[in-house]
Length: 314
Image (cartoon, rainbow, N blue to C red; front, side, top):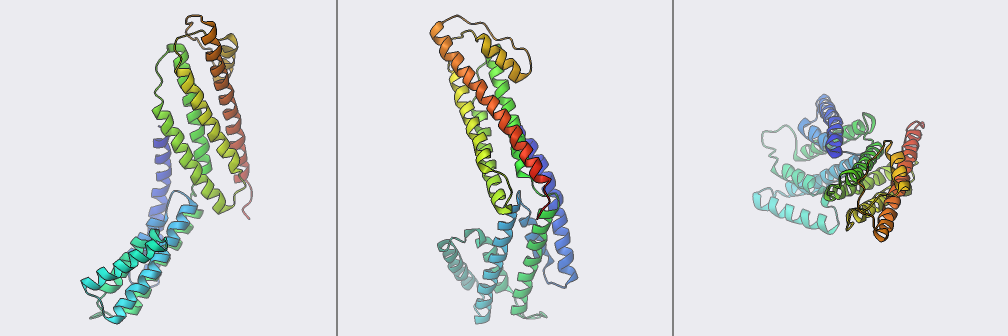
């Protein structure tokens, strides 16, 4: 559920920013007399991504691919090799070189630009192949610059806040699951929780990239520690659900759970069994302590992020 809500909000921003970036880049391209405003719009659209660091990467790959594609296409155009076989050979060389040099992210852009330049027919045109190549490069430059600036300054992505909100909702899921187990003895489906934990890990990696790229004063170790505690809570919840019989919850655990959940609970009594009760209540107690730690760490992390956001940008 959180993933859907987050996606709607995140992509709502991206829709607005993408539309704005495309409109501005096309207008700028037209106003300075470039040949293909469409390329500017495409470049701007591609550059608007879910984070500033990925936006920068997309912009770099687009510019890099455009430059090398323009050079390769211009070389073949200059030599007069512009038929279908020559284009196929040029792409064969380009793909192999880019893969060997680990430039895979720029292959598509470089390939498209190479073909565009090689297929350009100067007959009846008012510009030379060299000028056509220059215009292609400049159109892409305009698009990536506008796209990156719009993504950076207008409704910038806020990965840290998204992650903290996700933390809070997953924490609530843990609370609901253990409550459902204690009060109704319902079987807990663990696979949805696993998906959420995996999603949190991916989001944390995005935050890590963003923090390093923008040099934010956020301790990544604290974020990873929250993730670690969530996996510990999942492990404990798994052990609690695998109990062989229903046994009573200790008074201490009941009281601590009520404090943690902020409500009175009515656990099923179960059948007394000293050995199982000790093991079961030990796991429940550990689970409660872990959720308490997660709650405190989320609160502290949220405070640090808010404090960071109020700092003047240097």
